[in-house]
Length: 371
Image (tube, rainbow, N blue to C red):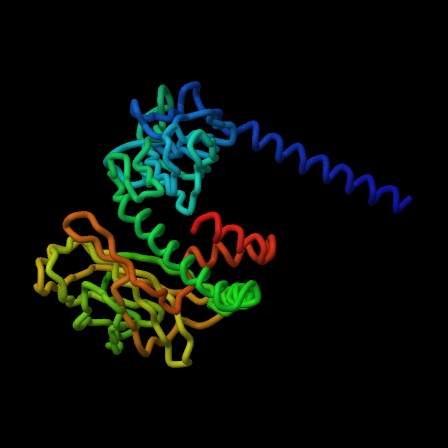
C-alpha cells in the first residue's frame, strides 16, 4: 500500500509540474502579427529564404516592452563571390539603452547560390504598447573572400570581420606550414596543445564598467610592460595601470605612430599576471584615435575591468602587458600581428573544437578548403 501511495504521489507531482510548465508557456504573451521584420536593401548580396520567429516572446516591463528575439534566418548568397562573414543590426529603438543589438558571424565559407543559417538570440527593450513592427533585422555588412565589403557599416563590422579574417588566415597559414614540415602528427600535437591551453585557462567573469573611486580598498599601481610585435605600426610607449581587489583600470595609454600613414583606430590587447603567477588573457582596449604619421597620442579611458575567477579569490595583479592587436589606417586598411600572442585565438579554438569532435582528418580538410 505504501509503495502504491508513493508512486501515485510521484505521478501526481510530475503531472502538476508538467501542467505548471505548460501554463507558464501558455501565459507568455504571443508576439503580435508582423512584430518582426527582416529589412534587406535592394541589390543586397544576400536574400532572405525563410525566417522562423516561433520561439520569440514579448512581455510588458513597466511602461516598456521586453522583446526576446529568438530566430533562425536562412539567407542565400546571391553573388558570384564566396562570403566570409555577415553582420546584422537588430533594432527595436535607436536612442535608449537596450534598444539595439548585433549578430556577427565570421569564419563562413558560403559559395555562390548557397544558403546558410544565421541564428539571432538577443533581448531588447522598447517603449510603448505592442503593435506593428517591434524589431527590424537589418544588414550591416558582408565580407567577401577577396576582402571587399558591402553594407552601411553602422556597427564598424567591416573592421571587426576584416580583423577576424586576417587573423584566421594567418593562423591557418602557420598550421599548413606545420603540416608540410611534420605531417598530420604535427597538426595533431598542435590541436592537443591548443585544447590544453584552453583547459588550463582560468574561468573568468570580466565586467566592464565606468571607473569610479575605490572606497573599500585602496588602489595600487601595477607595473606595465609593452610587448613588441614584429612590424607593428604602433608602439605603446607607456601606460598608467592601477588595481583594487579584482578591479583593474588602465586610465591612460601613450602610443607612437611608427609609420608614414595616419591611423584612426587601435585595439590594444592586454594580458595580466597576478602575484601567484597566474596568467589572464584579460581583454582589449579599443580606441578611436587621430594619430598622424610619426605622431604621439595619449588615450584616456574611463573604464574599470572587474575580474572574477571561478572558485578563487580575486587576483592580486602584479603586471599588465599590452600590445597592438589591431590597427586601422585612415585609408581603411587593417593590420593585425603577423604571429599570434600567447592567447588562444578564435580560429585556433574553432579548429581545435573541430578536432575534438571529428578528428584530425576534418581539421586537415578544413585547412585545405580555406587555404
